[in-house]
Length: 248
Length: 365
Image 1 (tube, rainbow over the protein chains, first blue to last red):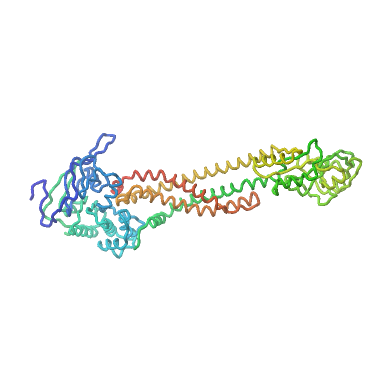
Image 2: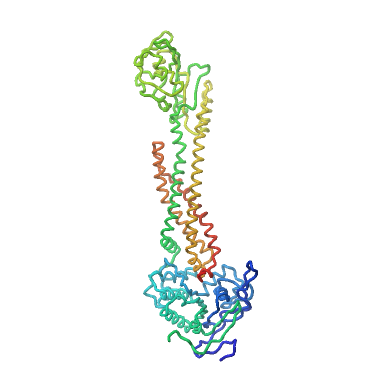
C-alpha cells in the first residue's frame, strides 16, 4: 500500500492526465453574527484529466462549499482555483456563468429536470444556455444513455433511473471537461443505482473527469481517489486496491 | 433542425402552471377591460355630458340695450354664428290680463326650439297650432277655463286653446306661453331675448360669447354663470373620478399580479437555480421571467380591450341612450398601463430571483 497521503496505484485505475482542477490554498469564509466561519480552509490539491475522484465528509465538513467552488457556483475568498488552465477565483459573475456552461456538467441527486419539458428538451436546455440548440445532437446524447426512445416523454413519465440518465445526457451535451456528480445514486433504488453507476464507469473509461460527492462508501470505492473533508480541511486518502462493486 | 426557443419555453412554462397563469391573466384582463372602458368613455364623455346638459336650459342670454326688441335678423345670424349644435330660442314678453282680470306674464316663443332647449320642463302636452297656449302650473289658476283662454293686452283680446300645462317649480309656472308669431300679431312686439345653449367646455362657451359680443356690438351677450361653471365642475369632477377609479383598480390588480408572480418564483426557484447552474446569465434568467409577465399583460390587453369596449358601449347606452363605439386610439394607452402594472408587479419577484442561491437550492436546502 502506498504511503499516506499519496494516491495509491490501482491495477484498474486509469492514469490521470494533466491537472484539470487545481486548488492552491483555497479558503472560503463567511461572515455571520457569530463572526467569521471558514467553511473550507487552505485546500490544496489537484485533479488530473480523466480522474474519478470521490469527495466525502460528514455534514458541515465543507463538502458542499468545496463542490460549489469546483462547480463555479461560488468563488474562493482567498487562494487560487484553476479549472482547465483558467483561474476562476477572480472572474466576474457573468464570466463565471459562461465558464460554467462551457466547463462543468452537473449530475444532481434530485435530477432537477424541468417538469414541463420533455427528456429531449431538458437536454437541449443545457445547449440553450450554452450556445445554440440542436435536436439531433441532443438525441444522440440521449441515445448514449440508452433513452433514445424516451425522448418525447416528460419527466413525470420516466422512472428515477431514467430521469438520472436524462440528467447525465444533459451534463454531457456540451462536452464539458468536468462532470460534477452530487450523490448521483442517492435517490435511486438498487437496480437503478447499478445502471447509473455503470454509466459513470463507462464515462470514466471514455476519459471523462468525474468529481463525485457521495456519502456512500461503496460509491466512493468506485472512484480512483478519495478527497475527504473534516471541519473545512481537506485530507486525501488512498483507497483499498480492491475495487468494491455493487454486485454481491 | 428543431430548436428550443424562448417562445417554446415561455408557452410551456405558462401552460404547466395553468391555474397561476390563468389567475394572473384574469387580473390583467380585468385591468385592461376597465381601463379600456374608462378611456373610451372619457374620450366621449365631454360630448355625452354636454349633450345631456343641452336640455338643462340656456347658458347664454342675448338681449338688446334697454330691453328693446332685437333686430329682425338677429336670431338667424346668431344661429349661423353658433353653428348647428347650438340652440337659440327667441322670447318676447308682455303683461296681459286674463278673463278673471288677473295680470299674467305672457311669453311668445318658438315651441319646437324651446322644447329642445328646456328638456327639464315638465309639459303634459306641447302646443301644435298657432292658437294653442301652454299654461304654467300657477297661471292656470288665473284663467276661468283652461280649454278656452282669453287674454287682453293693450285693448286687444285674443282667444286661445289651452293645450297643456307646464311645471318647472320656477317662474315659468306663473306664465302663459304662446307661439311667437301669434304673440307678435297680437301685441305688435318682437322678441326681446334670445336664450342660447352653446355646446362645449367652459372655455369654448366663453370664447363663443366673446365672438358674439364682437359681432353684435349693439347687443348684450351674457353667460349664465351657474350653468357654465356648474357643467364645467361636473365634467372635471367626473374626469377626476375616472382617474381615481383607474388608479385604484390598477393598484389592486398590481397587488394581485404581484402575489401570483411571487408565488410563481417561489414554486419555480429550483428551476431557475438549475438554469443558473446550466450557465444562464442573471439577465437571461430575469428576462425569461419578465417575458412571461409581459406576455400575460399583452394577452390581457387584447381580451380586455374587447370586454372593455363592450362595457363602454353598454354603460353609454344605459346612461346616455347612445352608443359609444370601440376606440382603437385608446389601445396604446391600455397596453402601456397593463405593461406598467406587470413590470411593477414583477419587480419584487425579480429581486428574489436575483438573490437565489443555486447551490443551496439544488442540494435541496
